[in-house]
Amino acid sequence: MAATPSTPLLKDELDIVIPTIRNLDFLEMWRPFFQPYHLIIVQDGDPSKTIKVPEGFDYELYNRNDINRILGPKASCISFKDSACRCFGYMVSKKKYIYTIDDDCFVAKDPSGKDINALEQHIKNLLCPSTPHFFNTLYDPYREGADFVRGYPFSMREGAPTAVSHGLWLNIPDYDAPTQLVKPHERNTRYVDAVLTIPKGTLFPMCGMNLAFDRDLIGPAMYFGLMGDGQPIGRYDDMWAGWCTKVICDHLGLGIKTGLPYIWHSKASNPFVNLKKEYNGIFWQEEIIPFFQAATLPKECKTVQQCYLELAKQVKEKLSKIDPYFTKLGDAMVTWIEAWDELNPTGENLAKLSIADGPSKTKK
Ligand SMILES: O=c1ccn([C@@H]2O[C@H](COP(=O)(O)OP(=O)(O)O[C@H]3O[C@@H](CO)[C@H](O)[C@H]3O)[C@@H](O)[C@H]2O)c(=O)[nH]1
Ligand SMILES: [Mn+2]
Image (tube, rainbow, N blue to C red; front, side, top):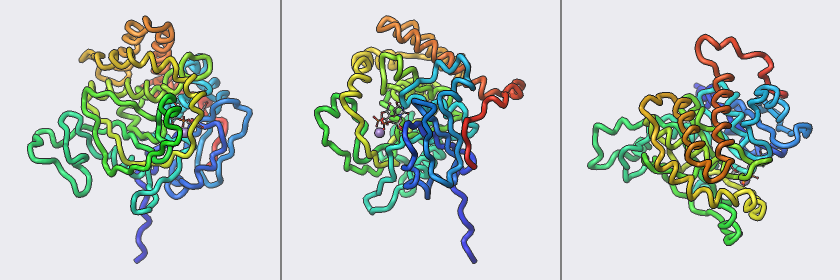
């Protein structure tokens, strides 16, 4: 009896979002793992440039003209000339799950030499609970061959729904520019076979390179901020989203995991260029982090949108003293939620979506 072909997990419930300024040849290496899934390609930079996508992938591609056409004036909240543009893909997706990956990330091998299906591991991470409220010292208790250790309260073993799965990187680690400058040849060769839940009340630096999340649980919080062209900061897109997301996950009782899967990060971006982009962020983060550590959300905030709008208010009130940029960012956070709700209407206003909301290019 021929084995029934296994349908890839979440095949019709997950979109892969790729921000790009280059041809997507890297997909060839991912073909065995990604081909069954729908891709949302967010083309940054010059919209007149053609991005080549290898044959056989089912995708929709949005360039800046599409973003402007679909969002109109609200397009101002989507960054230009920065990987932060990827969050537009989260907004236009209609699926429950998102996986986002950079186009210089390739399939890594585990210590046995086997190709790592990063997408499969992220899906496993998302489909099983997190343990943000009590730390399990034997790492992920829901994993095959592990469990809760002695002393772990049975009343807490149901865990919390997992909102985010944060993967890591072999080869080029995601270092900031100063670290890159002093350690230009450092490569991450350490494969740690673990998945950890980030405890409640603890922030973390979220990297957008190899990231998956439950769009229904936390999607509206995944705004990658105002970065790149015309902005005083860059390369803090994913960080900003991670800090907002973690505060909201803690408030709503959701979990965030980090660890497996690994991808192979192949390209070190220019540390001097990165230093210019990150410069303000390196100083500002010393005040931004205490803000998020102290941030509290009223119990009336029950939806991600309500939490996010409350955070936007606090950002404008408490961070604008650092720089007027944070007033602009707070307003952009509100615009993001307005755009999100416009493209993702619930209930009666479902019919409002016009056909103008389609991509410039699709391939079935
Ligand atoms: O203007 C741009 C530049 C790049 N992209 C696309 O974004 C990703 C990441 O680009 P790249 O790999 O060149 O940059 P890294 O320094 O390695 O990226 C790390 O820093 C974060 C940037 O905030 C990023 O999430 C990390 O991975 C690629 O797909 C580029 O094609 C872009 O869209 N616009
Ligand atoms: Mn990269």
